[in-house]
Length: 171
Image (cartoon, rainbow, N blue to C red; front, side, top):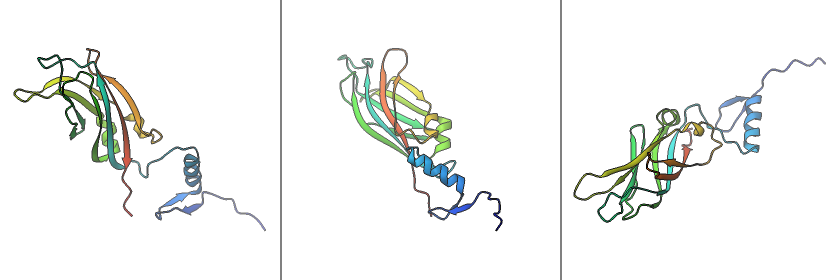
């Protein structure tokens, strides 16, 4: 009997979406290699920012300390950390979650991190900030990305990690 030339075969994947055999093999290979892939070209999920610590902050209080907190901004979404009192080298160890974020929007806007000194009787003082590219999150292999960024020119820095957690696709 003659064999017919084979083109891409369709295989049924869990979740009843159709993939070619080549896509199925690539997906299996990525799982074997520990590479993660997103379920769509523009998945929606949670951007999880783990604020670890800052160092070398400028003193904004009369006693030579600051009462720092961080505002994380991603497009129009914004979250604020708790205040760490009377220190120039705060340890935050806090997770801020920005929900329902389309990955492409996050990649386009980047992450803005700004430290402020909390004041009860006057305006809060900006202690420095940084804009962070999230392009490395396009490839899901990074889990999570750890960074230390300079906060302006004074030698202050902020250490944090960030990861994108895709929401489970709706059936």
